[in-house]
Length: 403
Ligand SMILES: *Cc1c(COP(=O)(O)O)cnc(C)c1O
Image 1: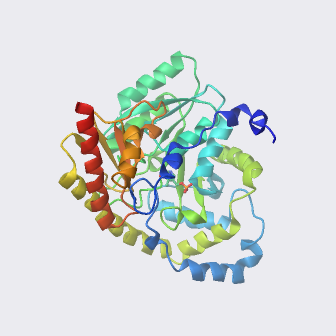
Image 2: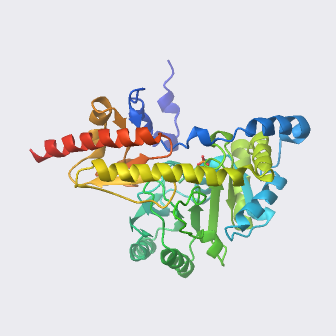
């Protein structure tokens, strides 16, 4: 047998299997999983069947052909209209279509990060972004959050420290609206402050925005990109949560030079995003399916968010605290005195409930008291039952640790 390990690059040797994936292998059918990050499949529009058929039959010569690395121009034009409602202005040259936001995260890391460069993120932050960036070996500096998002005094301290240490800061990565994993949204004041700091220290901001379509409480928060007068925000969004993740189409808006470099990197990775998927997304926008679907998804998820918050209030012991997201897909729960990664095997095997331990979302992996709970995939009944089971697991763990 070949020694594959001896063939691996340094970059690859540093990769490790996602904890979540390893842990969720144990989840069997009788386990209620609050651990996934998946949309409710009943929200996937059935009209996609007609669209796919129409696109293949009437536009097949382009939709099944190789395409431009930057993406299908007609789709960009639809996206320009779609984003204008959020106050985001862009031209075709400032947009690139990617294979989901995940590819965009990798490409941005690929074109900017040298080993040892600084990348600043919220703490905790999106696990898959950490994975994408870490392949390029940056120093990831996590900045703590409160209920209004990233704390700006701490951000400025982190910026100053990086500069003093001689580490070039390549970008600040943020999910300002309904953050994954915490569900926290950055206040408007903080957004302004973040833009001011980026300007003062001449920094690039990477804004990941998959969730602003699902704000449940009528509280509007403008994307950073809409406040960006200096073209220092690279904005990314995706069809994953508003059509279906399986089509793998996302997009990036930013300075046109930056977009050109991203395109150069993308060409080597996958030539272009699936043209068939791009044409399906294009038609879904043109036919108004996405705009009709969004309010339905929002309504369904609001009911589930409310169910989860209600269940938490009903079942959890007093040591447990949790966030109250205004939208998105996740609640973040914490309890002093438990280590959620140690508790998980017991929660799964004995109480038949799963969640994602918070540790995985910390760049330094040194916080152990939190967990991410998803409310979009399970049904309302499963949410109540899942939280009830979880509360029993937490009570057992707390009493064990008191002795
Ligand atoms: C779901 C999600 C995405 C979407 O990634 P895709 O690759 O487009 O499916 C991006 N960022 C965050 C923070 C997410 O939660």
